[in-house]
Image (tube, rainbow, N blue to C red; front, side, top):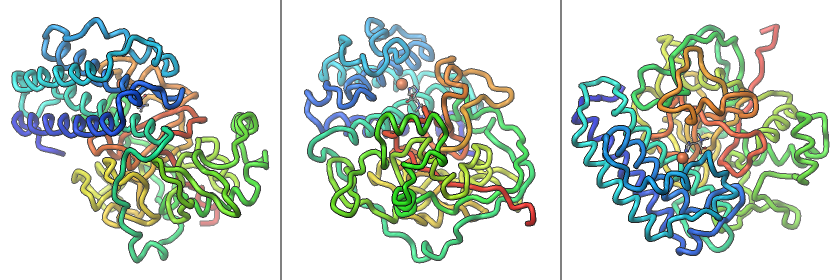
Length: 440
Ligand code: AVJ
Ligand code: FE
């Protein structure tokens, strides 16, 4: 685990906050002010809402709760309360205009860094204050991912560019299709990770029977076979609610795909390109992932299976922080942090392989799991119920592993994301699993 003496902690916290702000600044300066204020999709907030919401959340938690200081803008709390106003109605709120929003977030940050310098942090201990700085950095990075989704939904020429990820490594084509994960208990979740969110806690033992899991995520090529086999016309592959949903909305392919001539193209950050067959499939709902798996004679992994495949080290019996070990993610481990604006080819990042041989678990695409979003035994809401607790229940499905759009500060082997099973604008794909045959 990272060294958490007060001085290194202060440096880590300041660096994490600064990295998040650099990304926020880029995402909110690469389009003009009218584009910041307009709503690009009813599923998303105007970018300028995200921007000031980031500052208001920091105002509430770092200035008021941790610093015990006066609020900078208590008058805008209600406008930026995500629970009071669903995304669709946010454009009609009295939002701070772009210039004012930029000043607000900058003023809050200056004062928050002041609070960081003044706050007493006991050596190595997880204090509520120490957690709050990590929570705020993660919150801003989560909204940076949300804003990147808005950029992907936006019409018009590209506003963002990034280099392509490296080509697949030499062994990518010869990897086994699936990996056997042996049965038995493993440690799920964490009690030690200082910046783990409430829903990742506490660490607990889980018995997971032996199963087989895909070595890499499902690719566009395999997904295309499902489409061409009539997958979207065949009700037997679909959960009943999923079938009703694709019929009602006329869905026949992942979001952003379009038929052109005899093939398929997709629009990606303002550029239209042939669907790359060797990349993980992206922008599919849980219903589509579930239907594909059934068509393939397989199923989605449960959340516990995913985490065991990612963290369990059979040599020691321990759970690692990440598939590759306990070291923080580096550029060779995983495609994270919006370095590339697309997932890497199937089989990429050999240095990020798990002890059992599973690849691309972290980064590239969020992976839908079979599981509902539920609390772990011993869960305690922290620091407030609306962070996770109000979302627990069968209506939300868990996603794991993070995407290319996720920053390392908000990505761990234990990190849990959740969304509605109809959602497709998020950077989500999946991999499949199956039970071990009786005879084995
Ligand atoms: C964990 C991604 C579902 O965006 O709704 C942002 C993260 N929580 N602000 C979301 C979050 C509060 C959350 N997700
Ligand atoms: Fe938020």
